Amino acid sequence: MDKILEFWFEGLNDQTVIDKRAFPAKKWFIKNRRVDDEIREAFEHDLIRAGQGEFKDWERSARGRLALVILFDQFPRNIYRNTPKMFAYDPLALDLAVRSIREEKDQELQLIERVFLYMPLMHAEDVKTQTWSVERFTHLLTSAQLMEHARRAKGGRDTDYRNVPLLLGKSVVRESSEKSPANTPYYEYTLGYARRHFSIIEKFGRFPHRNSILGRTSTMAELEFLNTPNASF
Image (spheres, rainbow, N blue to C red):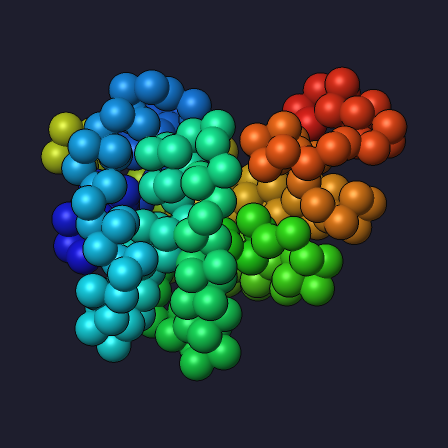
């Protein structure tokens, strides 16, 4: 559990300024063979074991569930990229995410951790789940805005964040140009992604970019969509 969280977040927390151009954020949503190979070598065995139910005890804690969600939702997309198996663990991830939200386990996590707990909602090919995804990411942005307001009211912006790159092990997370104490630009970015996923599912009922991987026949409308910029993720 700890190995997964340390690898994925590298010490990031709600006091860290996140720059999506720098590690560890840079590795989250990119297609990079080196990152894929690293995750495959380090975590494929754990993924298989978790899929067989060996780590059920992790579900006792919010962070344990988060580790499982990352293992089921994020890592298969690296380990099995461009194969049907990259989506095979999505139902397990979604079940954990839904139960965690309903039991308010998500409120025990830091904001950046909740991004990945909610990610299975964003990946679901179901419009009701996508609606819930937009709601959760909207709430996440609101929480960040409230946190930012509180920190600025206390004068924390200058003393905690300005002119200081944050060193996290071997990673350097650069201060964002917006100098937002609670990363509101980053949570605006994630909400934008949630809305984009929702609009695709609302229109097509599925993600057209998955069709070729899953052996599904695309409609003419989907083919036209796939020829537009940023049609896939």
